[in-house]
Length: 369
Image 1 (spheres, rainbow, N blue to C red):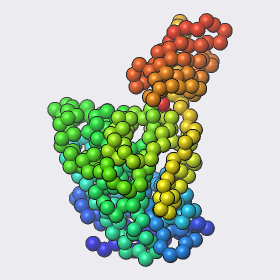
Image 2 (tube, helix red, strand yellow):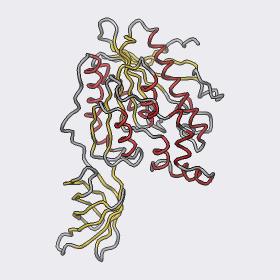
Image 3 (tube, rainbow, N blue to C red):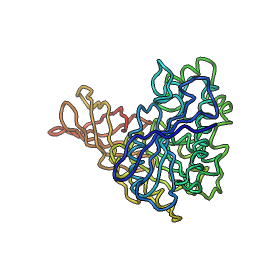
């Protein structure tokens, strides 16, 4: 299958960007979805062949803004990148559907096909890289965020041409993620109504489950960024991924799934430095101190006060899962302090401090960004 001619997109002091398109090796029968679209960013300052990173976006992405930031950071370090649009997203979304709407369906067979097509598209991208005289096909990196990280973990396991991988906010155990993620409640309920269970789904998805392909003794570099309070990709899923790749380097954000945006610039810089280090043949060490604020939002019920909406910032926390914490909260009634403990993923019980009043017991329902 031939590759389309690159179309010029943009040129800056640091890089040139072109767009490539090619037919998917695993067609779905949907015309738009079966044409892979990717933006290729090539550093302008380079000597000889340069390494390249394939970048994969999150579920429901409507643009490549995050990947373009990654591409810029990589190019400034002399690394090319190929930002690939995953099936059923953006230009690949069939008419009348939202970006990503069909990428995680309430249909296990369709989900298997989407994952298989995603991996096939990335492997074909590796074929394209091998045809480019300016690229070093022995140094192909793979980086994914959220859904992109899940796809990347499966691809890394089955594609030996991948030199190194960075998985941001991903995990393994696809059935476990699907059955427990805060993003798939409606889809999960549909499957349950059709008689599916988590165990049945796990058995059905075993052919596309990263845990069935990852090797504990794989010597290739792996970097995992996780969020301690993630509800989209639950922490157990990242735990299972890390158990399968014990040599991975890990950075933990003290946030929920979306809290990486609070430390966006430093996270992007760390991502690029990882590939710069590993492509250079050196061992990467993630930052030992990486400040990432824990922001909470929810409802506070305290004493005889009416329940109040709050936004809070944690000042102290202990326990591997943040079991006990102290948070400074802003509410319509004024500033409040909360010292307590988690009794569930989104419930906390503890002592509420109210200026000018005696401390009282209270409860919060909250999510962590």
